[in-house]
Structures are given as C-alpha cells and as structure tokens.
Length: 177
Image 1 (cartoon, rainbow, N blue to C red):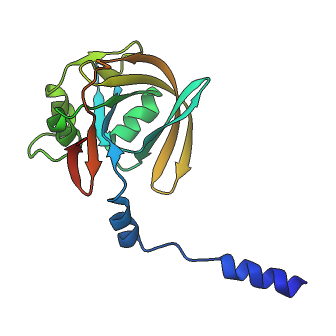
Image 2: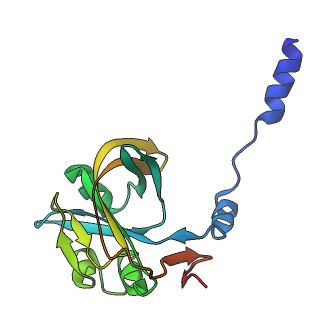
C-alpha cells in the first residue's frame, strides 16, 4: 500500500510553469485598473495595479498585492493605510502615470494629474475615481516577491457613476465594449 501511495504522490507533483509562459497566459485575464496610493502630506507614493480583490463583506476587507521592490511598498508598510482608487475609462492617463509609462514623471509628480485629496487617514484619495476604498492594513503576508496586504475598508467615496471602468487586457488599457 505504501508503494501505491508513494506512486500517487509522485504522479501529482509537478514543477511550476515557466515564468514567461505564465506571464503570457495572464495577459488573457482582463483586470480592473486601480491606483493604490499611500502616505501623507510629507510623502506620497502610488502605483497602478490589477491585483486587488474583495475578501469579505463582514467586516469589509480587500486583498491588495504589492511588489516589495516598488517605492510605494515601503510607504504602505510605514503608514499602515492605503487607498484603492478604481479608474474609469477616461482615466487612462492617470493609470499610465502611476504605472511609470510617462517619461519624466516619477514620485510626487504622479499626483499632478487627478483630483487627489487627503482621506480620513490622510492617505491620498482620488476623488474623481469611480470609487475609492480607504483602508487600514490589518495584516501583511509575504508571498514570493510581493506582500499581500489584508485591508479593512474604513471609508468608501467616489463618483460611483455609470461610467465604464478602465480595464487592462493583453498589455493594453481598454474600456468595456
């Protein structure tokens, strides 16, 4: 019986798929575009991301995944608060700024576009986003190159309009058709 169990275990073990194959496959997974922002009046940082999802409604919590190598990660870790700003289809230029796709624009300059206001925890919140979730980080879980921040939602603001969201698919920004 032990040989049969060992054979079953061996037949189920597989090496992970190659990184380039994984990245190519993930291009087919359409994602919402958000700007994750953190900091205060002294220092702000942000990044464009699609790695955000709802975890629970009671209490209201989001999961936000951030690469440890980006500057914003350190700001989030220090402040223990962040905002998740869901972009509308007309906000591609904001997404590009925070994704580092605009030459000569970095750091604080990223906040020169959009209606950024301090939230109740002083983190930057994009007031003209479709919706903004202001969050308190309750747990950080290491995951390879990233940290998964489990965040309690402490405020919801934004336009909450019928405007289409900005989507990222196959390496391009798009709106719903």
